[in-house]
Image (cartoon, rainbow, N blue to C red; front, top):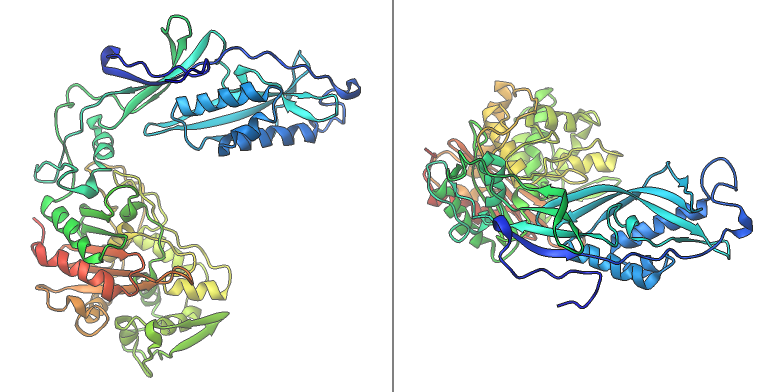
Length: 547
């Protein structure tokens, strides 16, 4: 138990209405420090253009130290360092605040009646596991006898309602684990499907089940402990009419189980997998290794490497810049500002574009960069594949980026899914589904998600050519690891450079029947060698087509 008068420890009692108080913050009233104005000039005496720059600099420095957790440094910028450090520590730790963002306003500084300069700022306080508490406050700064400035310490600068009579308390509401099922009604629990454990609460909440954590920051009377007002509320209250009704997702228990098992083929490396339906974008399986923590599959930001050649090929085919049987030489090296090479410095003299695709020839694709305008690759990615638009999948997602290149070297890198091109398995599974069907469908894990994407269908001729190229990659190219699978499987491998001191990431995307799959294995070296066995394991364990 803390003996500090600035922090009220959590009370170990049964809270009213199923609410558990987990932390509280209380502080005593600070005594305003003295300090006088040098030569009695005041904060605006140095001109009419605004407050003294030195005062603003000190205000921003205080906020930066507080936000970064450098509390001794922040407190040292105040007129009462000891008290300030204790209060700031109890406020952030007691309310489970992590990585606050504190921003001083560029305008609005005013001189107060007590002679201080008030600098307004916005506080965005992320409360662990609940959400962000945002409020406005004001820093009072007082000029010192030496001409410098300090934050004139008082409780109200931390929050306008923090005082010697009122404090804050964080309360978390005990919630029953949300009931989530797959598309057929099979219960999905984290113990059986580890990759879903971090997502089940979000899936239930976003689907209207009222699941997920709930809580509030309460302003309470210091003497009585009674709640004065609720400052911030987090989480959705369950709808009594649907509270006991399981939330059905688009996931398929059979596919999810197979996906979790398939990632065992990644040999302990970080990896992720997404499988989704081609006809509507519904996600059948989403798995990560390790299963806890960051959701690489949907929120990761990776260079997709040569799997992105599906998009590059689409851009070239759309404008008849190349045809599968055209000869596009594949040398070992090609220099465009820097030297680019193929995996294992392979070469294919006199190769056709089909051969370049199936053998994933970087130099051949880079040599075609002049066929596309600088922003054309990004435009195709956005217009036909939905990349970079806002997706609403039922969970947080990163939706990709294909920025216009800054120079020829970056344009060359973009042609092969490097440079500043960013994606993840959810995006690349969607790219694969779009390529083989001709139509983009926003990926989703729950029914009824908002869809604000706007795309155009790929021409049938382009779809036919892409399907043929991907099939040839399995039968005659770098995805031969899938050649023995039943059904007509098409695929594209990818090897993405990360840095000079890390092995390449390995990628593989594939489709069979009405399903598209994407896998990335961090530091997997090659796509066929690392991601290939994962995809093979998955497709060997599931039906050729989902029900």
